Length: 308
Image (cartoon, rainbow, N blue to C red; front, side):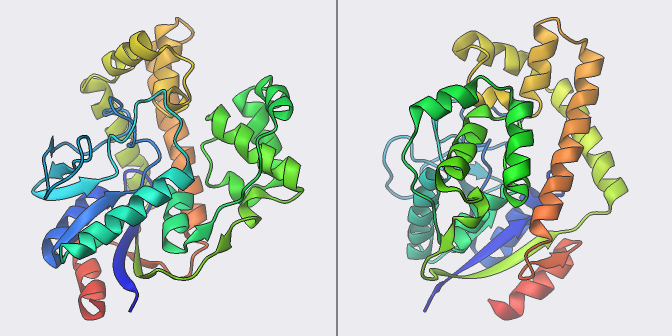
């Protein structure tokens, strides 16, 4: 029989983390965070990383400990330093290993996140494209700004553009490299391997006006909790050019720290860009007819109980 897993998706600020905790408690589960930004250590406030403590669960390698959030183990958080490379293939291998371990403990693996392509890679066992690096092509692409790269990628792969971080130059360069070298859209080069999981997919649906209010409120809380200091410390330690710093929140605060914008303008831009990102997330997830959309915990429990 295929391993049964629960998957919770939705746009940023929709309440996925809280729902994952509630369902983990209800169904004896452990959470795997599927978020391309919370994998970075030290990037806590700007990624809305859940608050908890690192604790051992069983016998693990040094550094391979989950974040315990309200008594629920959360894996997939704080895996690498912000200046390290980390790919979708790296995370797929990590998540598959964790699913085996969680099932081995008699627990339910619960994948929670908004990085749609990473979710698909795990759930659908995507066989990722193998295209050899072309250093000359990369050098040419690196001369362009992130905005120029995203516009080019959007033209050659509109579907793939929904799932990529439009400000991460490294990922944009790699995606374009694959498209150009293969002659095919990056999003169409991924084929499904043999099924590994019996996945129950839940989507958290939030009214658009309410979601925008939550996003604005979350950004205000990030600022109040010290986002400016977090970005300053990261810049002092790693510089300002590493790819993870291109993420929403970090990029705008860097503009402020460099004197290119005042703090009020930076905050407005964070809210605007987060809202645009949330809309792209919804467009991506709405394409999947397997997702059951719910609006609250009661609907989620009613949906999952008979299946599990």
